[in-house]
Length: 196
View 1: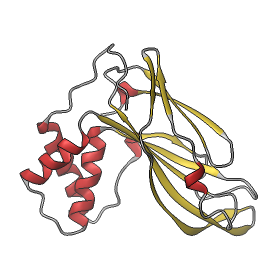
View 2: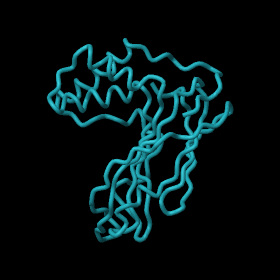
View 3: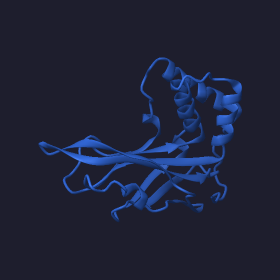
View 4: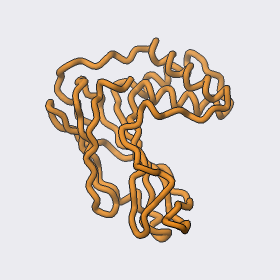
């Protein structure tokens, strides 16, 4: 992982913010609510439940800021029955600080493409300050699902992969670049300063 050059400093992620994020995540789990990720979406397809015949697609991309990462993992821990302790909050804080991730949710072109996620490229994160290359990708899935395709339903493989970077110290407009398993190129622009 490469750290980008300094510019307008991002808000520091502190242990107090980690505690706040962990409590937000735990509260959603305790209320049996779905995990609310909308504030961290940097991309969503027009209709994530629909697909085009013979075409793969990226359904959504979530920016995994340190705050969002702690919030999400606290949510998972509470769903699994773990108590939210100060030690757990600090463990989540240490795992999240100084890291920035992008969770890419995608579906395959056909029911035969079970390994499509393993063919995604590494990612680049570019800004006016420089370029960083992602570390090792983390793949989750895929699992089989059905998408609406016109008036029919087609089986596809669906899953996610996560790209991780050292946290940029800039609050600028960034662009996430990657190529999916079928050669389609993505360049998603976002303003890093908008995300907690």
